[in-house]
Amino acid sequence: MPDATNEDILNVEKGIFEAGAISKMLDEKLSLLDIAKKVTGDKNIKVIEDCKIPVYKCDCSKEKMENALIAIGKTELEKIIKEDGKAELVCHFCNKKYEFNKEELEKLLER
Ligand SMILES: [Zn+2]
Image (cartoon, rainbow, N blue to C red; front, side, top):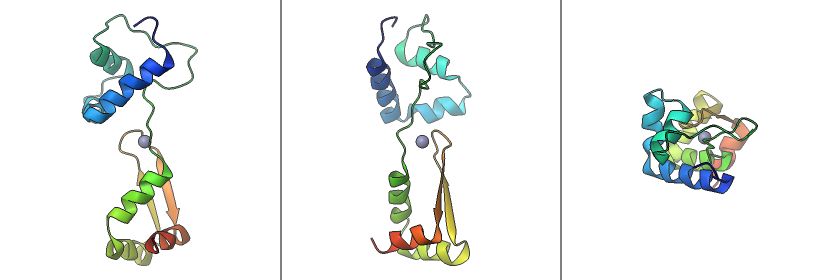
């Protein structure tokens, strides 16, 4: 897709993200370019050199990680606070690290 705008690329990403296929492809150690080729079926696809935005942009956020922590349950959360005093979550998709200190974890308990 030679005339692909950033918006087009984002739409493709959204599609594969929703299909849950990206983690499988990452497991297979495919490069982002290979994944883009697979997804679009376009063998001539090129990574735009001066594009600083990665082809695959994860939409994770600290807020989503908070929700994940809340989802594990109060008891588990209290255990983490007692035993570790902090929590460190790594996004499964982009490997971004999110750290929560004791204060932040205690705030989540109040939710
Ligand atoms: Zn992420």
